Image 1 (cartoon, helix red, strand yellow):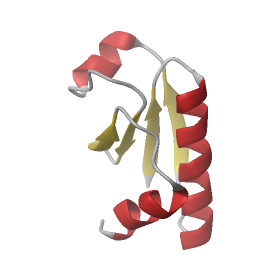
Image 2 (cartoon, rainbow, N blue to C red):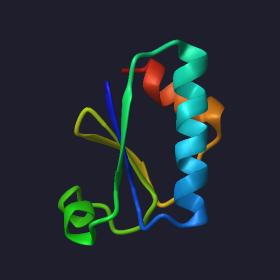
Image 3 (spheres, helix red, strand yellow):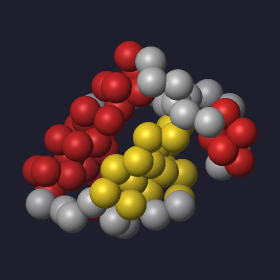
Length: 78
């Protein structure tokens, strides 16, 4: 599983990454993480508000910071 955290590196982006890493650990998934800060690349995903969460090239959410529990639900549904 390849997970991308899209955003400028702001506090919300850091919190999204933290929640996502926690969810991945709790689910016991094997995942690689990548931070995407290039605005052109972020816009290429159709994301207008950061932070964004992309898993295996599918946008799962943008514009808000979910709880680790919510990220677990998103990842489990995949």
